[in-house]
Length: 110
Image (tube, rainbow, N blue to C red; front, side):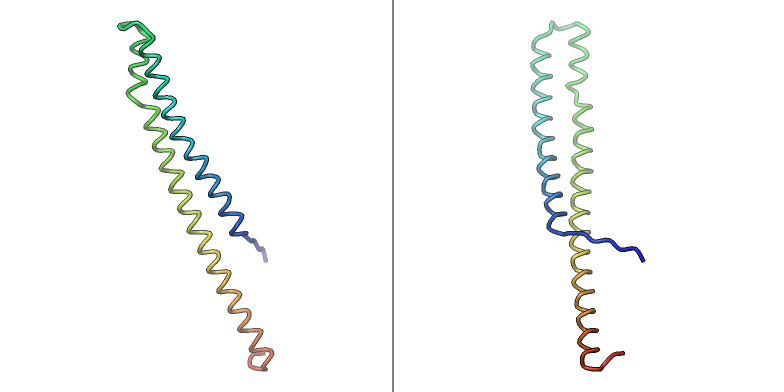
């Protein structure tokens, strides 16, 4: 029989760190938007560079970043639910085991 065990406190700490790290995506996105704006202001209009920066400012990167943030949020929520389900299952197994031990001690179950 194979077995596995999750330490819920440690798993939650990892999830909390992932949430903190994901929050940095917003800062990076704002920094990127600011840098693109500064670059647009720095180049002469009508050039290929200006056109490329204007295309970048339309936000194809931001759309990908938003999709990634949503996927991260979904994964974190699902993982939190799984940890909670694990805890409830673990508690139920412990209760059942204790009940069985009590039955055996009192001669109720063999």
